[in-house]
Image (cartoon, rainbow, N blue to C red):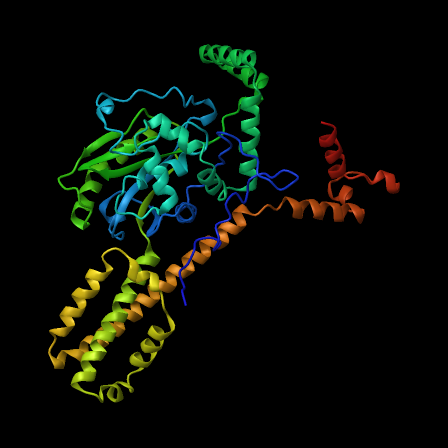
Length: 471
């Protein structure tokens, strides 16, 4: 049986939160709504898995210093989330100029997309990082998308991403229903503006910039309460690629070179090297936020090797090591199992090996080489070392099982949080209000006097529904 955990429902409910018409069809809006999703490891991991990215998950980083990253073995990239100017006031089609040198980047070599639509920066940051990690398995869908956009410029890549219905639905499947509604209403509001309204808004923005008096600002806020700034966060990716470390900010013209590394490989040594390169850049960004005088909110996520896949591979290697040791013991001493029956570890771990099976672990890249290497080492062991090695194998298997259970619990926690976050409770609240109204408790609960009689008990909810239908 397979026990692979999924950080969310086993079958990706693509478009689960998107609005449906009366016939149950999803309206497809070109450049349609992208809802806000939270900067949370469980959300980012679920999005990646639903996109088809394997052996990769997000982990929260609490410190950029070496001690804060030492527990992470393989870091493919970093995603920095920070508070920025409200996206509703960012003109994403008029991107800020970058320092000299960005125009020399070969966009066919490094994959980078500009952000051309609101609220898409989380998924965009994931793809900007993942598409530049050739060692990751990204699945057929994303592979086709990357190949299709390979020779496009950053703006065309951003346009292709914004209009990809499948990616957008997976992104929105992790949003709260209220956030999706806000995105839909914001899209309708922006598209409904006439040219004259847009000109008036531009003129108003210019006048607003010239106001320096506090009295004038107060008067303006009173006249225009609809333009209240909401807290908006933006995601920036960092990834090593082609002996360099890049900052991938979708609101810039192109990728920004952070520094150089001496090696293209991403083994443990070179990984620490690229982290040393990126560390000052993130420190500078944090210091600039702290010096801005505004509310400071930011976090850092690392895209790392999937914990479940890594532990499953280790357990499968131990299983094959156990089989090889047992075969050698059978050749040397046919009665060795009788001697081991008194060992509690032997009975317990042997049952765990028999009960758990994950055939996908043996398909990992490099697994066959590791397995063959261990097999050759076992064939060279002297007879007196076979039993101690088997006991060592059992102890390692016990520890690995504990880590596997922790990964399983983590995945179940993420799935439960996802279900709570994305479930639409509006129907529950509506039914509850209607039940209160039928029993005559709704108006008193709202602090309103009972108007008396059956006709007087017209609920606020029904009144609201009739107003909507008239509108």
